[in-house]
Length: 212
Ligand code: ADP
Ligand code: MG
Image (cartoon, rainbow, N blue to C red):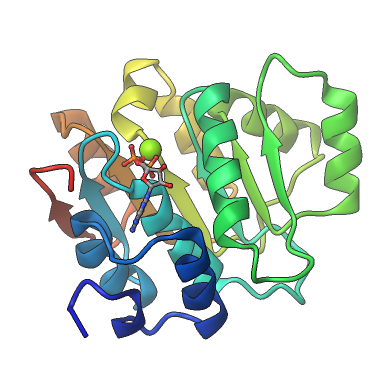
């Protein structure tokens, strides 16, 4: 058994079995380095190029910690754009195929509010969205994050470039202090360090040079 085997992790067996059916035979370097601290519940900042497998790193982490019987929003993934949010939603749904009745909901701008509000009334375990629209729902009271366990800032560098810093801070204020915070980025500008100091607790830092 190689150290890049998913089965070396303390990961739910159903999740591991599903990975084999997806053709994921070994962890990518960023997955091999970030999953142990993520599964241990630590805050993690991970930097890796596009295509290095960051989505499965945080996706498996949030799914591992999720209690499907508790039908409340337990994980929130913030992404810079609707296209990225759709990709992340699709990947999380693939990773979650082994978990019955799991609900993943995408909340992005440029889409009408009505259907989103309807979906939120039905409930969800995981929300993937853009900061602006997630903030809108929090302000309207159509989304609550009191039971949030995992917060993911995906493509954090791009979200900061787009000026989302204050909106993200506002969203984080609506989440429990006990949450686990995971930050993923392709680059590591100084501003990221500022965010980490504000919203993370003793984060583990992971940097992967090559993509695979
Ligand atoms: P990033 O967010 O780092 O740019 P993605 O999470 O989008 O990268 O992953 C890139 C591609 O690699 C996706 O198509 C994903 O399904 C695939 N992938 C991720 N992890 C693995 C793995 N361990 N084995 C095989 N393919 C993987
Ligand atoms: Mg990505």
